Length: 143
Image 1 (cartoon, rainbow, N blue to C red):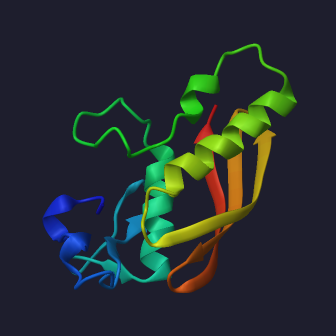
Image 2 (image 1 turned 120 degrees about the vertical axis):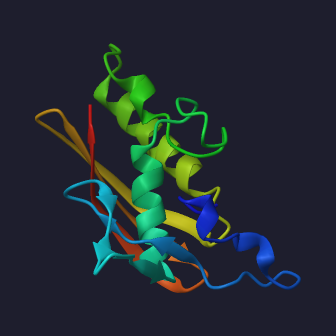
C-alpha cells in the first residue's frame, strides 16, 4: 500500500493487528518526496495516512501501470463533461471515498466538501483512522 513499495510492506502485522503506518513525507508545493540532509523523510501514523491520501487523490486510476487498479481516483473522468454541478459534486464525493477507503487504516470518511474555483477542485474531508480522527485539507486537483 506504500507509495514507494521498496520502503516496506504494510501487511507484515501479526494476525489482525496492523503495523504502524509509514509513508514518505511529501513536499506538496513541488510534488516531490521530502529529503533532508540527503535522507528521505518518513512519516508515521495519521501524518503518513494524510500523505498517502494526498498522493492517491492526485494519481489518476488506471493510467499508470506501476500502480494497481485499486490505487488512485477517477475524478479526472468528470473533466469536460456536460454534467450538472450537483451530479459532479455527488460523483466527486463518491470517487474520493472509493479512492481512500481501500486503505485499511482508514475506517471512515466524513464531511467531504469540494470547492470549484478557477480550474481547481479543492477537496477537504475528515478521516477516522485506526489512530483517531484527522482531516485532509486543501487537496487541489486541476480540473
